[in-house]
Image 1 (cartoon, one colour):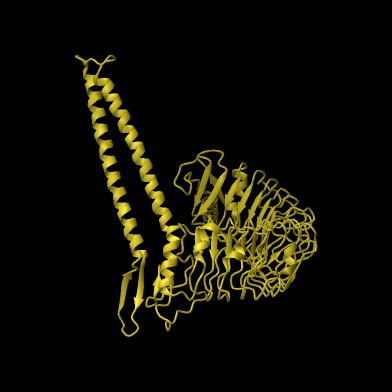
Image 2 (spheres, helix red, strand yellow):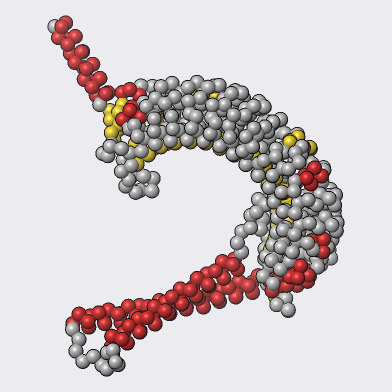
Amino acid sequence: MYHLRISAILVGIIYLTGVTEAVIYQCDHYNTDGEYTVRHCTLHGVTVVHDAADIDFSSEYPRPYWFDFQHSQMDEIPRALFTTFPEMQTIDFRETGIENINKFTFENAKQLRHLFLRRNKLTSLNNFIFKGCDRLEWLDLSHNQLQEVRNKTFHDIRTLTRLDLNHNRLTVLPEEVFWELPELAHLSLNDNQLVVLDRETFFHSRIVSLNLNFNRLREVHMVDRFQSWQRVHLRGNQLTSVEIPPVPVEIDVSHNNLTTILVSYSNILVESLDLSHNLFADISNVSALNFLHTLDVSFNALQSLPLTTFLKMQQLARLNLEATNLTTLEHGLFSQQSNLTWLDVSFNRLQTIDLTVLTAAAKLEHLHIDGNNLTSVGYGRLPAMFPSLTYLGLFANAWNCSYLVDLVHFCRQHSINVAPQKSYGTTLDASNVQGIYCKSSQSSVLPVVTPIEHPIDTAPPSAELSIDRLLEMMQEMNKTTEQLVQEMMRALHQRATGAVGTPVVTASCTALHAYNYQVFILLILFAILILNVGFLLWVHHNANVRRAVDRMILFRREQGASIQTALHEDL
């Protein structure tokens, strides 16, 4: 009896072992767009609990190269994947709960190009864990809980060109962590807790784009050994000074504590520089950056600008001076800005503005003068001075309502949009013209408006342009339909008459059916044409109604609580 029990236990163990080893996950060849692709493999409900050797994978087709996981939970990466599918090129482990990567996990991943491990539970990366990924180009480790990266974590993936380590908890990086990545071009370290970086951290990589936004850096050494940097982002740190390197085309050091900017090189190729939201009182050093195309110094307490500030910036096209406490714009300040297309001087302390200070900026397209204390502006000169002007920001000034109606009407006549582009909020009981607050009497009090940051190149399309584009599309459609109708009529006429114009006496049943079919198609085309014309008239009508409503001005009686609307007599 004892031997029988032992035998039964052994049989049970063997049976359970066989069941465990028989866990095989089958590929689903539908991608995320619902398309059936034999080279795509989606694995559903995969569960790995620190024993990846007990599972296996199979595919209806022998060589899929793109893999992803749905509704899966894995503590570690199963090595069997790379043994079963040696030609794998891309694998996406996002949101699968991976906590650890073993040292020999990727020893058979010889063809792997892209490895995505974002949104998992990784806390540390040991040395040599990517050994075997001889052709890896893109490694995404973002949105994990990484607190430690070892000195030789990436030493076996010399072909890597993009590395994403953003949105983790890194406070420090080993000095040599990127030294064995000579081809690394795109490095994202933003949204970590980095406090300091060694001077030679990026010394051995040909980095093109470096993102260090939203860390805790107080100092940074931008040493570009190979002169390869193109984009450097340091937004949202704790920097107090920064030295501009000679090569990068785009530099963002906004939202820091900068008071000093160092320009130590003679020929600096920077084209875009964002210095907004800092503590600058003087930006005279930037006058040496003669290749600048875009400059943002908004939200700094500058108060005044020397006449030579922009003297060498002849390529300058976009300039943001919003909320810089300027009280005046002096003649000569923009004397060399013949390429300027976008200028923002909103939310300063300008009580008057002489547009002739912008005489050189004949290509100006967007001019923002919102949020000052302006009561008038020489708008009659706008078309002559700025023939390309398409937007004029007028919000939150001290306009008289009657004056503002004339100004808005003039801008409409010259296709200049004046509708506010920022979401400042709405005060329903305030007098306004097309959403722009104004004073209906001398004693009227305007709502308090605070400046709102917006991207320097954002310009939402106006409703008028959308309507015009819609009308143009409808006209093109009608023209095409008309051409089809004419061609059909010509074909029917040729069929109904002979080559010399004599009627056809006999015709086969097939020809008669074809003739009837063409008549039917002709009727359908006529119906489409009529519907399009009707819709076109309806759009025109709605556009005219909207323009009429836009011309309305909202007045509030001083003694009563009622609000009435009235059209200006000239409109």
